[in-house]
Length: 196
Image 1: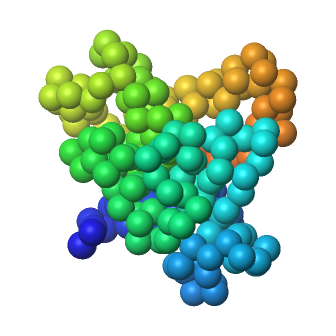
Image 2: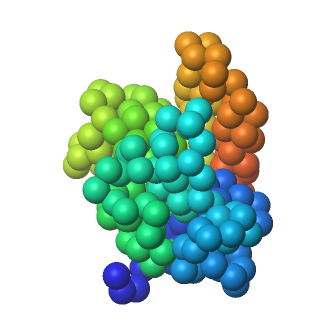
């Protein structure tokens, strides 16, 4: 795909800690290649096909059900990054936001879809929540202090996850991980020493 921005590289690598797991390391055999022939290789690239997971077959956090045109089985890391860049970074207008908000919006787009992630931001800044980040939303967003926006978005995401479980108890097994992700994302994007 070419060269990506530092903000995107930072956001996508952080997202892999959740999409693949805390062991995420591109130096692990099979991680770059996306091999799935052994349990260790499947773990290295986060491959799963859990019947209870609404995303279906998933690798590098890219779910087949949300991305039906992508051959998830044969996806490698460079292909996965290209998907994340076009489907979530650019589609979510992250390239036009403060780095902190961009990283959080990117992560939210991965978890909820770019439209729902956009609604979280729009609600946080008090504009119509139509799920489309356009010039009006960006103008208001970029006039706001990023850390309060990030805190509001994280609060909304935690409520969203709890509502999922309240409406479908089969998703309870994912709740602790989802809430941990929100807590850790909040710490990541609001760390005053972190440069984006």
